[in-house]
Image (cartoon, rainbow, N blue to C red; front, side, top):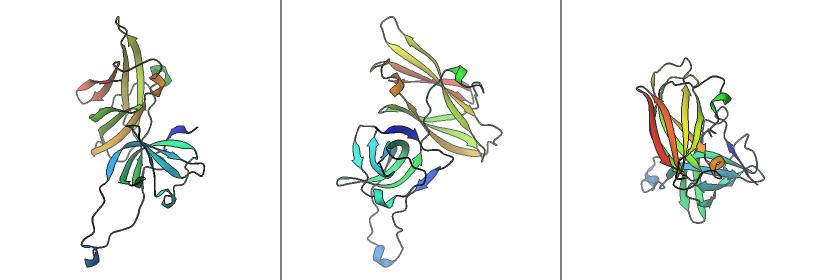
Length: 221
């Protein structure tokens, strides 16, 4: 059985898989660049530690046809990694061009975070349910310092009619970093821990710290 794991950003921040460079000679004037898709997806490794399948949030399992061309140090065999992948659809699978590590933020109660609930501001760009995840793209003001993100589970409530609401809070610690320019950060929050206690029609509430205070977004489970 494959285990789910996020790629360590300390090891792999952005991995480019170079499949060949296109020159600017006259012979290449008719070259047609491939149509690439870019999306959050899981990527699995086989027993030899090679990326073998791309698993979309829509439930499609697509073979990575160029797996033998990809070499990454520190990859664990029989593991599923969460990524932002850029790929081309091919007959029989996909050709992988690049992948970026996506951290997994597992919600935990407040007492699991001794540093407290850090509230340095950020801007939400996107929040959507995809497969077994709640996916996020946020924008932060940063220069080159370390930013820490984590998700607090405040409560899981039940209404008189039986509907359930999960209250989450994204916390952000910018440390001493300078607010120089805008950068994007990508996260996936695994929802599989709630599969036995929540169902379709239930609600996820996400609170996010912004320049004007906490703002709230809701999405269906």
